[in-house]
Image 1 (cartoon, chains in turn blue, green):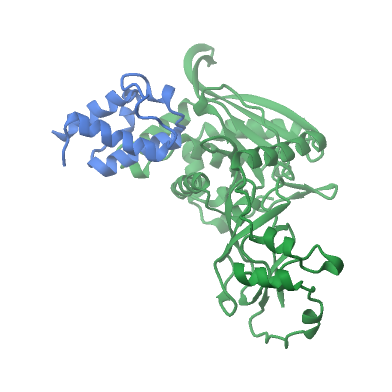
Image 2: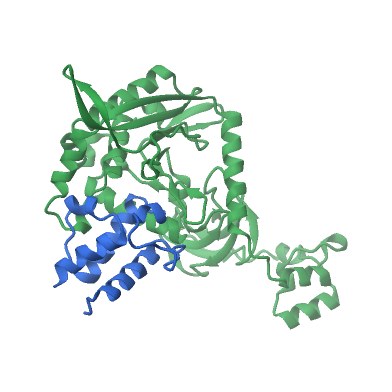
Length: 83
Length: 375
């Protein structure tokens, strides 16, 4: 599996769009808090993390949720665990 | 002969369009089986049947819009034999003008199945053209807005609401949940929303007058708690389908079923029982960051429980001020069915239950028979 950063960003965006189809990937700012930009409730958020877990096989501890604010944070988190 | 009628799939529905049949004449069906898909103004709904039997005749065709209560199909009860066809039905058919019949043949329509607007109900060329015209795709947004407007206007017109609120310390519940989820794979974790739903169902044991329906001038308590979970739809609007038997299901099962319900609500594939069963509604606007929500009751239900966001606030406990996560729970209830005093008892019980999350989980683990019905 390719795990370079652009691939991770693109995959994360695809998974996010399957949860929030109205999302415009072009308009999303990677460094800004995700939930300020996309209407995600706690179930959507959990589903997003579950889909990342299923795609990449990365365990995401609940105590780490608070660190995952922007899409960059999410990608950093994945990248650190995929190498 | 059993008549299968179009059920009401919510207070805001008075007609529906049959989209497809999932069965055909001669098919055996069993209780709870999805037999048709019906489009309401809110969503396409899988309609279940509540009898065992054999499909005899499908009376409404895909594309037809009919009022609630219309007989959609007839079924033979197990062991029943079909009566010979009634010739009177043929005699009652409307006349079809020759031009209409010709046009119908070109369009592949059966003119005898259409209702006519001509003399003595005869089917005219215009009726055929109208039947063949693709029905304008209903604007889901507009239709949903109308449906919500109708139900909520009725609620505010008919239901004398009273409102109560209670701030509930959540440290115990959230700590317990974090510990419970820690070490479990992400797919087995439980959201706080599930614990809240469970607590609502358990608290209703003490105040059954908040769980049920107000119909024909009287309150009818419900035997089980089917929580209508308010789910916002992407693009606007909401549905509040039932999470069944919240009082007697373990938290893990409720979490799985809630996830499935949200998914299907957004995909537009809810079942008829989920649309018509809720015995009270729970709305959770906490994810949007509001502190509290005072709801509008969905008739014929008699109560709505609202949860805001969990916020850290200064909280006095044992004479000391501490920073503590708290949650505002509200109750909107129907004064025809209950009084503020009983509503207050409900919120106090909810408060108490959420201080003992393990007890909530244990209560759910008991066999259903030990819990009795929530009357």
